[in-house]
Image (cartoon, rainbow, N blue to C red; front, side, top):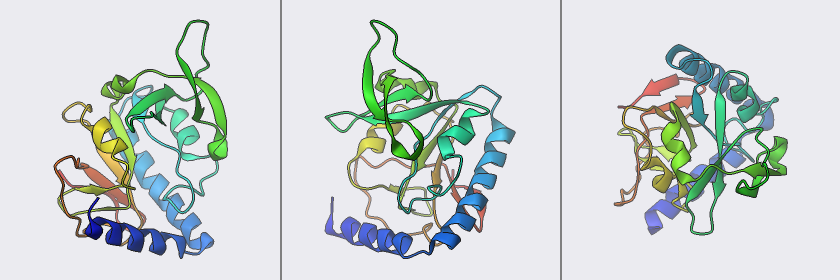
Length: 201
């Protein structure tokens, strides 16, 4: 991680944390509406969507029901489980392990509660018809800035060509300057409260 990336990351995190909760709630509702409309237009009911559970000041974190539960009303939802090597395994929201199945404690419950869940393997993301990813910022060309662990860069390398990869952002987090590194993966679209869904590629 370069010093420049750390500087941009710190600035964007600070901006999110300083946003008053009522403003975050309003922004999160607008973000959800735009994301929902996009997915409903492009995906069939029951399609697999790889998503995540927003926390803290992340876009979508104030939603009730939470983002994964809202998605699961229409789609099969995969949630990430971070492996010791910083790769991502995946679990199906609501799945429970059967005898002999691989399982792990994962943050799959509401408000990040830990539940025993069946894991599908890192390759499960290949089944996704859309992937929703966290991001702190995105360049105009789609380069994504995460929290620095590299988990999603590895996972996105497995996503099938043509599958939408959508980052949820606050207003002002698109078009940021991010130093590119060889492992960085891009997104194909972003959602902001003011602009809704914007296609980048």
